[in-house]
Image (cartoon, rainbow, N blue to C red; front, top):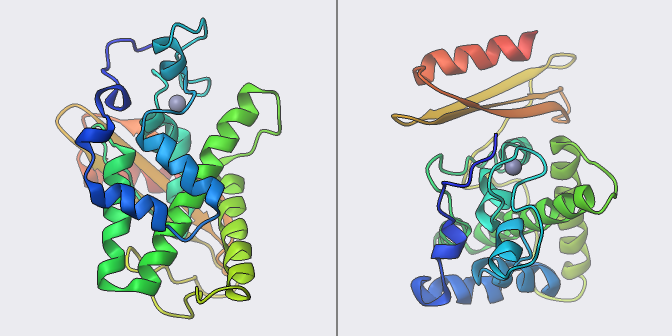
Length: 248
Ligand SMILES: [Zn+2]
């Protein structure tokens, strides 16, 4: 269903409304320079999203090719059901806010982790930035006729590329990868041998909600992940419905 009524949080945002700490965090993020530049453009409302191009009078469809909602930067990287499934499938198990998630606020949250634990904060922020980059690349692949990856594949791709970057960086700088210490966001434990583990999460407000689920095997590998909008249910009932969906 098309949605032209929802105001664009990207369009409303601008450099002056974003704290300096966010900009400093973007340029200090431990990722490839092209990804730092990408984050800066995402916060600067400078990505060629459907909404961004339409605002510049470029004759394109401003809606998301995956779900039909207005496609601004925040939608591509956080709010689209596809993006939510990718985040949920990742080792961060990040759940973007249900109401008007904003990439600048997400960056502020990831960057703030560095002050409490520098190494783990850098790893979390770096992987989150890599996932944003992979989401943008997956979106462009769909529009430009490239390879269509599912949420699990996008998540795996981002984690593999970030690990590769850390390995290469460790040979050339003082950036040291984390070793066996729990991530500050969430710590996932694999199930017993030959078993599967289904993780579910639901969030609701008065008029909007979403539920996600991820099934992993005993090696921690994702079998599938999905995120869908829900309404009118309690969190407990929503999570029960997610479990039922995962078992079908
Ligand atoms: Zn979408």
